[in-house]
Length: 488
Image 1: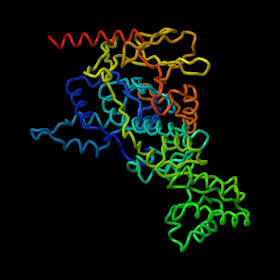
Image 2: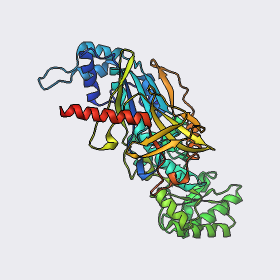
Image 3: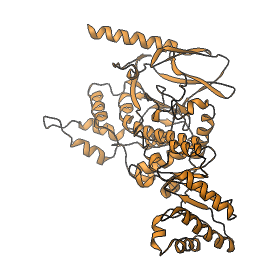
Image 4: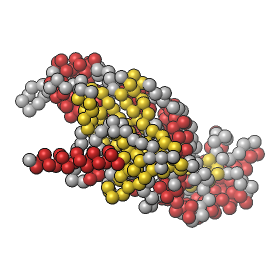
């Protein structure tokens, strides 16, 4: 997708400080020192109980195609410091032009459920290589995971009623629109209005007509009949341009004309007004007219909370078109994913590193981290974050990173699955990226393993995901040690 959409180097899709740090490592002879970084986030978005991992396919494509071209380094050569001299040296820029990331990457598969503080992705390799990848990896994973999570919340609430993503016109730019369509599909949407996403990604493309079609003609019946004449096999009629229930009657008249010609009206779309009452009235009118197979589509400012409310009111809606509030992550504009150094290699030994904060949730977790999920009878019981250099037993006690007094024992006889899978080794891809449809199926399957309380929209149950006890104890010791040394 990245190659087709952009077609040129994306190596400069980064914050300048990634490159200035890389120059610093180079100047100090540390460029090839091995380090390990992790992508994680501190809180689930939307006040929810889970997050959906999304964006790995684009990460793979970005890393595989990574490379600075001459125009990239020409730009860097023009950047100067406060003394008017260049920041980046010629030998470093030559190194950048030759750079192909020689990294090992492990990541959570797209569509998997992830929780705060868990490593979503781990990058290990030379300092310069790891550092330069930071911004782009966060850009890809943060946005797509946010939108996939929003889509999963909406689709879970909609239940058996399909959800279509209609958000392109209000998405955050071209790439935001394409990425949102992709992530929404992973999160469970059945299709998109975005034709370019259909071309690039194979997502089913859906859509009929807008209010402008109806407004073009002298009256609504003429507009509906003209559309039916032009596209008899794509008949969903938008009925709220003037008067919604009158529009339903006009759609019924057009449906009968279609039937006489051997075609069937697919349904009607409600885009405004009291959707609960209007949908019930429309359903009664359609059924009375012998059009019980006709679908009622609802769109407008719809999200999971609106859908939940409409269900409670007995709305008769068969399919949802969700736009702005899905494609933009409307009520929470960003997933707070971070990329933190967690270990450096000294000879044959990995030394953990930690970042402190006055806020416990912002204290990083040291070590080369992995995460293991425990499942029994098809239900997820808890996740253990651990350091692979410390190891983990079959049975384990986990400690809540945000509240060390909260602990849980995970049973040794439960099924166990490592969430991080190998993606790159020595800069070469060792992972077959699943089709987008498979990521969507994984999302549905994995959400099915989680208790309904965790998927609740308001005040969800907290799923147990924590640090393996030995890792927690080492983290605590490191915090105390750093604070002691900082006082001296």
